[in-house]
Amino acid sequence: MHKDLPSVTVSRLVGYLRVLTDLEGEGVVYATSERLGGAAQVSAHQVRKDLLLARVTSGTRGRGYTVAILRRELSSTLGLTRSWRVAIVGMGRLGQAIADYPHYKGFNFELVCAFDRDPSKVGKIIGGLPVHALEELAPLTTELALDIAFLTVPVSSAQAATDLIVAAGMRGVLNFVPTAISVPENVRVEPVDFLAGLKRLAFYLQPHDEQLAPAS
Ligand code: NAD
Image 1 (cartoon, rainbow, N blue to C red):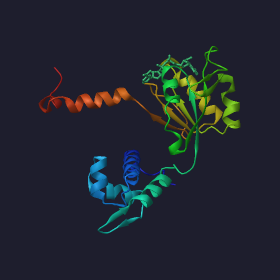
Image 2: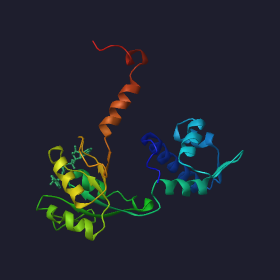
Image 3: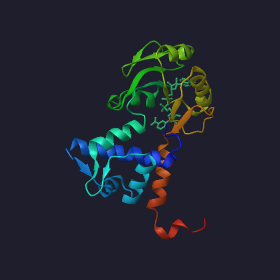
């Protein structure tokens, strides 16, 4: 419905939703774009522009947005009012840590099962999830109506595992592996790269006069 929204706008909308969820939890009824922007670390002008792009209509001149309504509208725009069924592919250290994270349900993400190629893990319940063999990935994707894969395999297996996920019919991959993977146009990959975040931090933390100096 809103597939034409720029990716940076979608990222900011996700940020506004987090702020609105906190405000609603605190019992706040109205919030101005200044308040939303302050909490989301963007300007009020940017907030208004993004919400306009997302075709959100709940603002009232003066009082601002009704927090509960805006939160519902944004949840709907972001596709968070339907449920998403998720599998973890690669049940190693990171896969298991993710399985232990308790907060998916609140956002309609349901962790259903895991897949791994290690026979010593297959058939076990790890982090509360049944671990299946890779041969089961295609039939179980259909049977369990899996939508999204968390990709947590080693770099050397990333593309092969992705090809299996795509062939099985899942439409989204949250890629924790620090490498680029290729998918067809109808599949979406979102990279989660904490090293990229660290590099961005290094840029902002270095003294200003070093930032634009040519490398020696
Ligand atoms: P790990 O070696 O502990 O686990 C990898 C798991 O993937 C193993 O269980 C292995 O059997 C399985 N696997 C290998 N090939 C597979 C395939 N084709 N299909 C399904 N399963 C397969 O590794 P890890 O530390 O959990 O890291 C996983 C990925 O996440 C790596 O790419 C790593 O760079 C990245 N990552 C890890 C961390 C971390 O803190 N551990 C943080 C950020 C990113």
